[in-house]
Every structure is written in C-alpha cells, then in structure tokens.
Length: 80
Image 1 (cartoon, rainbow, N blue to C red):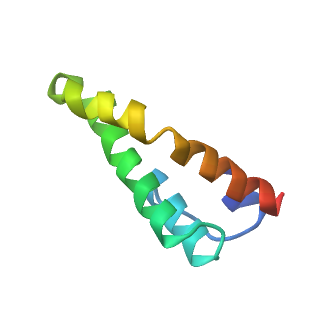
Image 2 (cartoon, rainbow, N blue to C red):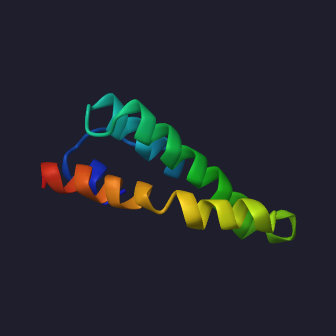
C-alpha cells in the first residue's frame, strides 16, 4: 500500500497486513481495520474461488458496506 511506504510505517506482507500496519500507527480505527480486513478475505474468495461466492453475501456487501470505502478515504486524506 502506497501510504504505508511513503510514511515509512513498516513493511506489510500482504493486503490484510497493510490495514493492520495503518491501525498500529493510529491511522485507522480498530473497527474500520476489522471491516477492511474482512473485505480482503471476501476479495480473495471472489478472485481466487469465484464459484464459491454467495450472491446474498455479495448483495449485502454492496448494499451495506460501501460506506466503509468512504470512511477509509476520509481517514487516509487526514494524513496526506
């Protein structure tokens, strides 16, 4: 993740770890970090095992969790 590199916050091993690094550096809240890490898990299933994607879960993510992206953008913009 670019922001982790630019701010020299650490070296994340994967996408999930990037959010953990931001959390440990007090950039993301615990609750937002948890939501974003769950999205990484969902993305992994969607990309690597798309046959297993439950359409109801996909609908739920689209309808109820898109606000999480805006919250992430807001938090990152505060430190830029």
